[in-house]
Image 1 (spheres, helix red, strand yellow):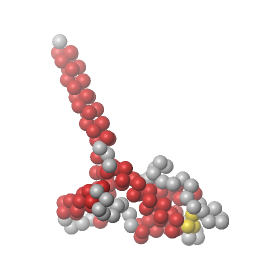
Image 2: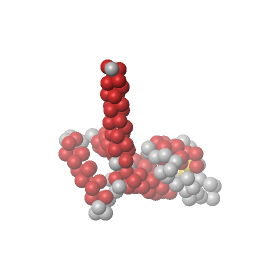
Image 3: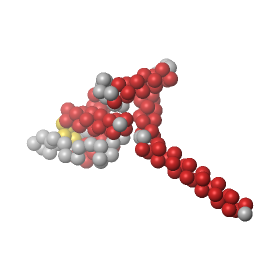
Length: 146
């Protein structure tokens, strides 16, 4: 009899856990918390609570179409990521370097343009990379907060 009660208890715990995981997934809570944590670590504010409240307010304003997209990286950050994969300092990268840089930004293949504009040498220039990265980051945060 005790083993039956133990099995029922385990079943209820598993059901509660599954329900919680489904809720977190459906509401995009984990990616949102990761986004807020990453933003906090990038900026290292003196008052993290006030900073996070401000970040959440920015997200709400953006969701209501009243503010800028609260993406993690600005143009300088994106340029530095580009430079990190532009080993020869050519000002342009190939498609594999582009994909690697996008993954460094926390984007997966579904988040970014797989066929960006290329120059006559089949290379992606810095300004195109920055544009594509910003677009992908905006797409990512938009999906996260809907």
